[in-house]
Length: 375
Image (cartoon, rainbow, N blue to C red; front, side, top):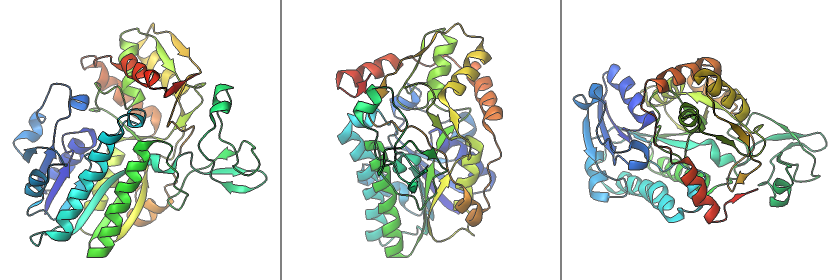
């Protein structure tokens, strides 16, 4: 079976491609080797370079994308810009890559009579949910709105019931939950997934929109200061540089290990998977930022000063945790990696790598200059 992986040189992409090759799929990669993600290295790892067809190009380029799509049976659309904070000021760029790039794909599926594509798997994001699902002691299941600036400035970070203002208890968010993106990135991912799902139904092909939680593991970019707190904090811990924690450090995320993400994605590609579905991909565990920092500092025996700043960024959410009931029922997916085991694997790998370029403070300054960082 022929599979096109857009963004196939990226973190999720290259690990997925390894799995596809192991299962004897014929793989084409389309990737533009964005410097923000890849640094100056614009080539595939040695174990992939001779085993795949590589097209260097951009998903916004109709000619190049159509060339890559020719003859493919499955498309895994991973290519995207993914920085929550950065999306709040690089608005046009995020719209062009995430939405217009997807429109080029759909244009091919709908209009090119040579299309052999029978299935599309698109990388969506937990960011589509915004603050997600909570239980209010008075009103039951609620979906808090974006947190208010005045509350945040007063150090009141927990989302509140939209009806009575009480602080609720965070719940695992299922796929039927209300979508309410808090960032432009989240909005582009929601539009992207809905475009794919709508047209898949229209033309009669299968499609899976995978709402990935916070993906991490060996091989992720250590150069990109706009995504991935594990990479950011690891770099700074190795340099003994100060580690800045937003809000109070009790904000939490569902960190899902790369091997589990590959397994979930592969199960969607496999021939027996069909239909048009939205699926969460996560670990089902909620880990606070303070816990993450403690693991990293202890591992590297770092002299970094850990500073809880009380600052906060536009577009950030407080908590998220995935409800995995649906993906378990449809695909039989269960995560195998818990966070304690996974972060040790990541940190052992990171220790063997050159320290990534430390552009983190520059990225924060960019947000402050635009009035998107507060506190």
